[in-house]
Image (cartoon, rainbow, N blue to C red; front, side):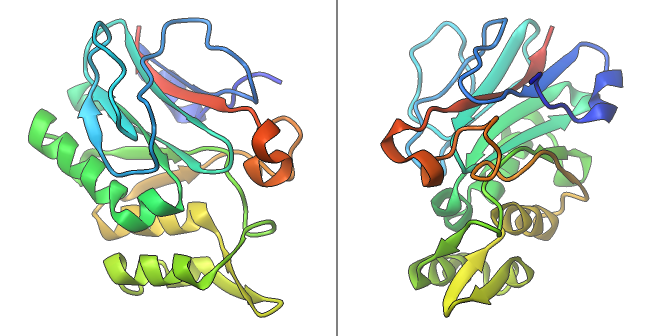
Amino acid sequence: MIALEHAPWRAVPGLRHGFLPGRTEPTHRVTLPRQVHGTRVLTADPDGDRPEADGLATRAAATSVGIVTADCVPMLMVASHRRVVAAVHAGWRGAAGGIVGTALAHLRDQFDVEPADVEVALGPAIGPCCYEVGPEVRIAFRATSGEATAAAWQRRNDRDVLDLRHAVRALLHANGVERVTVIGPCTKCSPDFCSYRRDGADAGRQVSFIGWT
């Protein structure tokens, strides 16, 4: 299986991106953070040590940033007119903790990019078909975003079921991002992608990346 792409981005000069299938290595250098399921977003330093963060941004030429996932949402962001990109890891903890707003604030503060100028692609992640969660998850989302993600929730077998990508998309819309596309299958259902829910400690990780040639 080849990398999944957001088709309209193929027309952006110099932009390369992809949601790689499970355990596939990128064919070019990708700067990755050391992810901790937090909300820290930084500007990438390809020549520095890997920072502890869950998102990286760049406008540098010949630089790609990425994140790894195994059920969480890989969020790729681009503001083409500023030649700014970001890759963000949005698990439920990060999403509930505010990483969407943090990422957009970083783009505004460091690159003068407004949310309305950002386009986002959300890659393969666990779907509502497979994502029953405990009550603490919904409590966490309500504590930071009220009912902004209400449409992403269902009840099944007396448990909460979360459509995590729908929740992230709702948070993006609430923060002023209008153009959001969801790409790819549920990772637990698809053997092409790594899934911690399916494989536990044996699950690998897949890389999602975006950057400039």
